[in-house]
Image (tube, rainbow, N blue to C red; front, side):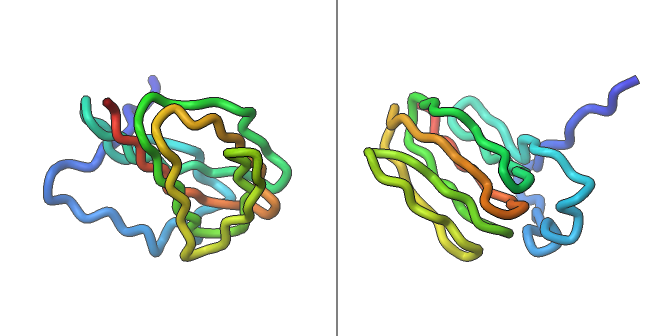
Length: 110
């Protein structure tokens, strides 16, 4: 029987520091989801791509581990640990992991 994904509850601490330690065994998952907000951990092995797509609200991509190219607005930029990138609502974007990567994705739903 599948185990349900745990979503963070109000006032629950989520330890991002430990995420790089389990890169090899963990998968992408939603960390928190409400009708207005989603925070997800994207695990992207080196070479994996997410084809161009868009969401209705603004997003923030924060690199936790590795390096990932983000293509948006006709430009490709490389995200490294400790960096983040904001994209406006409905902005088409694509990702390609250069090295094994963990990205924290925040989506605000409109």
